[in-house]
Image (cartoon, rainbow, N blue to C red; front, side, top):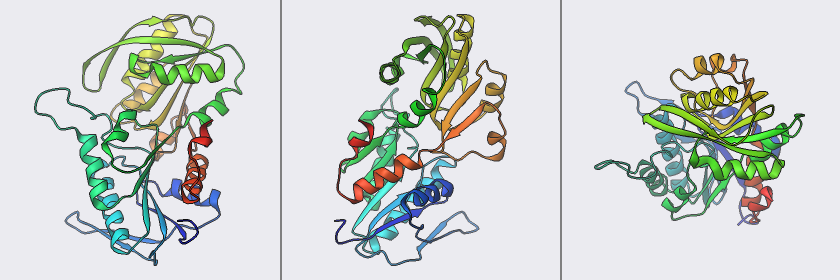
Length: 314
């Protein structure tokens, strides 16, 4: 495909800075897109360049406002399909609705599957995403899905820190991810036992593992209201950790998240630019943003060149 088609990168309105950073790595420019919102809230999309026969990548995390950005992405994909793009890859660094990936009660939707259907029906041929909340979501698609990892970005930063480290999973569900980090850093592993009392509310109970006198690094795929993360941090402090950090790929940071982080025991919380931060969030001294634009640019180049994406994470 790469020999017969040009590579084009487009961006929705969700994270233009990330799309521009990807283009900076690749030495190309963003294909211009007209994006307007009518007074009644309807979205108007118009691709301003010819894309007939091209290999097109649309950068659009489905972050807040989730439904607006999801609809904008679907309309851009449909516009590209009708403009005869050869292949359309949705680059969705943060996949919204990923936490609703199964039925947890009677008469509830599997929203992550519905979003997959939206994108497929719109005309997407391939999905590029980062740190899916649940890897099984890939099975909701009948097209190739490349689930990339932010691990190289975090590991490069963490390895520069001096001192004995222990990677901490804030709940049982994140143990596999924490174990992979611990193995690559030759660090210890700990788990915080957690019980969730209600949606967006969590109560950390006790610690499994040894953190006393060590640098404890809480690892999660996202930080939303920061309740789970801050509760886990307090457990680590109560158990004698020398310094406490956190890593979360997706900085959702909704509700009281910033207030909780500012009052927390964390010295630093590392996040990536899969979701853009507003001025208030950027002003929080404990939050440091690392960029995944390099990983995404290399993945896009490999997909376009029909070469392996997995080699980026060996």
